[in-house]
Image (tube, rainbow, N blue to C red; front, side, top):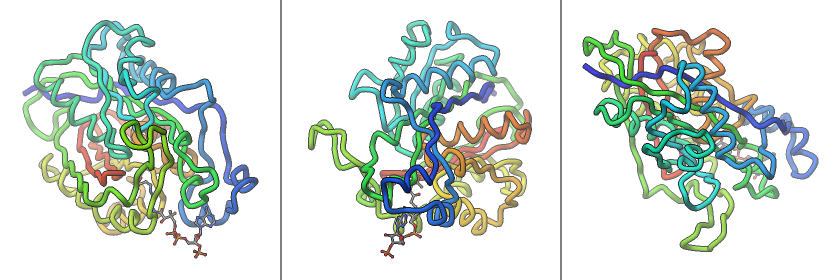
Length: 323
Ligand code: ACO
């Protein structure tokens, strides 16, 4: 049985750090409020001349190095982003050019904060079908471009960054002990789109727009939906929740991460959290957190990992894989 396997992980954060105290200089908020309600202490912010594709390219280079591959090997690039450089071409096409990767398949996936999990499912299909031998799945976002900096209920929550996985085919026995992707659960409920959206776009206002959110309502759905996704992905993978070595959640809010952990009875020592340092980087947050926990030695080859997310759409999903 051929499965797609995560053979490399990398990430990149823009240099500039914005602390909660920095935000309190121009919006009515405080470090205490932000830390207590969200767990966020700082976020990174891209320079004006540093587009999403630049973050994506750096994360991709690091993931390729980790996998022992070069740009010349890459035949599929999927970028999960809600903040593309331009309306088109796809950011993935720009990344292909900047990386110097050969002509192959490249496109973007748009599922907001769930984008990385959705993109993984698409790449998994290509690799498992033999249509790609070396796929880059990249989550890259500059959410700070979508902020209304006078709206304290949203502008304190988000940050910029990118992370990438390399997916390659691996042959196994078809059991849960094999390296590779084991199962997904993906959902979208478009009837709840007005809980979290951007009030602009090319076919409506002709502007980029600003992020709007009913935070309380999103919060309540997040805990329930993410828990459901984790249960769905583990069932699809044929594994029980206690068998999971690591949970790498989308990093929106420490209270959401804790709420899911309590609902499912997860061991908090198995849950990776980077929200304090990165804030919510939308589709980039999962590979950023994964890279952090691999580089510091917590997550190791052979571990069973579940990634999960929820975001605008509303979309949500999870994926179980063995490293
Ligand atoms: N600083 C100080 N006060 C603030 C701030 C701020 N940055 N933002 C809001 N407040 C005030 C509000 O105005 C309100 O004041 P009032 O009582 O005088 O009206 C008070 O704080 C409480 O506001 P709530 O919205 O009830 O605060 P809550 O505890 O719900 O926390 C938060 C708000 C952090 C947005 C929370 O609802 C949340 O995390 N929701 C999830 C949303 C999320 O993470 N979305 C990310 C995208 S989706 C995803 O990635 C899962």
